[in-house]
Image (cartoon, rainbow, N blue to C red; front, side, top):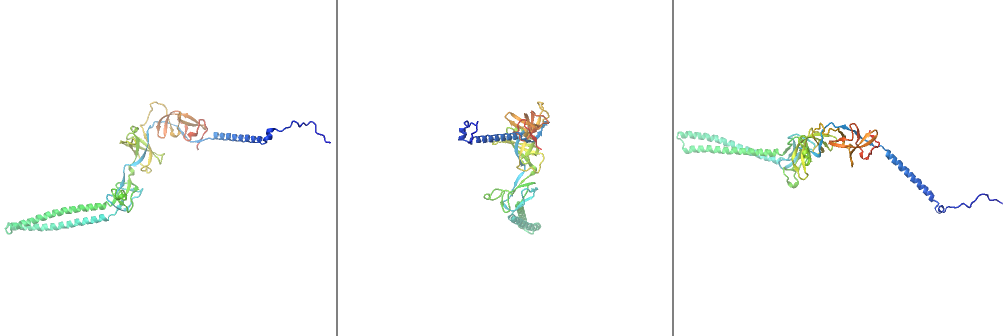
Length: 408
């Protein structure tokens, strides 16, 4: 007979009722806790990496303000020529040939187009024939006058010897006077015929359209075979222009200045212009004139600015930004030191303007006090010193004390 082991008490063993009802609950709790820990750990790692990511920035060195001219006004304008003409024919006619093309340079008097001249040539031929016929009749009258004068002189001699009657002498005198009157009339008719020839010749010349001044063709407005006229006619099917020419040597800037600031603009004042197509190219100029009238609708005054030197890159109707400068500033009233920082380095926030100064791999935010604007730069009265480097890119993402790396 087998004996039971002694000392083993099985009466204390029992099954947990909650484990018996849900044997997998504990395992899922452990899996959930493990997953939550992994997520938190990953988030912390990502946050740490983002915090340690070093932004790459561009910097500019702060320069001392050596005086210079203060900015009086900034405005927008357009390049406009003082001489622009849409060339039209002086007569109505059909275009026979057109020689103008966009972009072509032309000289004064150069032929741009020719019109059908068949009718004009026929009128000229007729006028010349009338003039020649009248001139031929005038020659015949002069021959008859010479003969009549000889006959009159003979009658005078015969009358002196009383060989002819007084009536015969008077008739000879009347024939001379009549021929002289007819010759005077014929001479006037020849003059009138010559005038008609000149008119016909002018009509023929008008079939050739020439450039009134040297320039560049910017628009070709008619084609061969189209009707052109100096006035609008034909229900819109007749062209009034053949080509548009611009004198490129007369280019200038036209700016609409708000009338509230027009007192700042003086004729002869210095100006800097930057074309929208070439924003980094600063073109010097000066105020040529202020048009003495205001636009009631826009409340602006038109100002014309002359370029100091023209350039082929400057084209009519280009848009540009214009900066009007004040007088040269040799000294400041307050005597305080000022420096110039680029506009791109300024960040205007709720507590005022500020810049980020780069030093030893970190950026430091500094509040600054601003002075006058000077084109692409701005005076800073206090906050930065000459020689310090200020950040010019990515200001919105920077924070005080953050690490930063210079762009190579």
